[in-house]
Length: 462
Image (cartoon, rainbow, N blue to C red; front, side):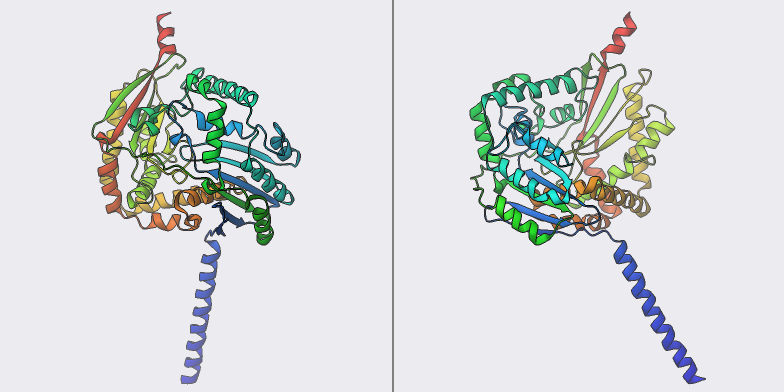
């Protein structure tokens, strides 16, 4: 009997160990880990490779460390204008040939200008990866900068401003308007889209100097994501980018914002709007601090999803609106920027509702937040943000992954951060969140911008 019991006990131990190992293997398999290989070329180009063979596609993404936040004074909109210039031809590719090259090879492409970077990407069948690396290197090496191309793109951008902002109801509200209103530092508070006079004033010398200054390999990050062989990609990158000369980069301007000590409140008259709208913004904590991650969780708790406290209060309980929208960084996400940022939400509402009623409801939601804040609320927010993060990383053939890898390489010199984001949120305690609410969601850190719908007012008087 003793020998039988001992054998049974040993068998149970072996079984338990085996089950534990299988559970650990299952947990490890369920954890999402992005493969990252990071290195720099001799000319300073930051290179991030992330292999993923689930689809026969590859992404080439080039991020330049220049956004509209630090564009030249008296040249508002210039960083965006220059983004357009990058498609106007290079040494070996004529006007619009870059676009044709991608599309004729079954790919898609785009570019954008954001607060702290300008980016370009191509998603192509994986066997066309070398071609795309060659093409991106060709325009990094030198653009075909002509007066004809500049004049043409000035017209394109000015028309974009007119169509997207000046001739649209709620045009520029609040993504373009609020930074100008809530911030004090010119670099954070100017018209990023560009004043028409400033766009007209840009000349060839400006374009050439801008390219020479900012579009250099030591001011850029290159990510390759998808189905490729690591050593083969490294050889191509060295071949096409390796001998592009580095530039002497100018010192970065001071883009810091002073602590806001008084609530701001303003009105924007909109001749095309038929309903009033409101946007409420708060200055964010500094990136990568505990308070920064706490604000990411507060964003989830307050405005993301149907269970957001402000959504519940303003939509479900009060019925003031049906379109609460918000987040950190309206032109991206909470990870792909570097300098000062706003957390903001906005919505339209009926004219029968007063701004005072809305702000009273907002204050009620904030009181509810502080009274009910506990670990369970934080845990639910972590689940939401993890789901959103995984969707972003895996979505659109991995473009979200390329975005984070380039952003973390440019701003932190550490693209491996992509694999530690969730852990940073898990470190946040109710005490940290409470402290963050007290400092960053205070009324004296709040900016309120409302739209006065002149179209509705005019219709009333008819």
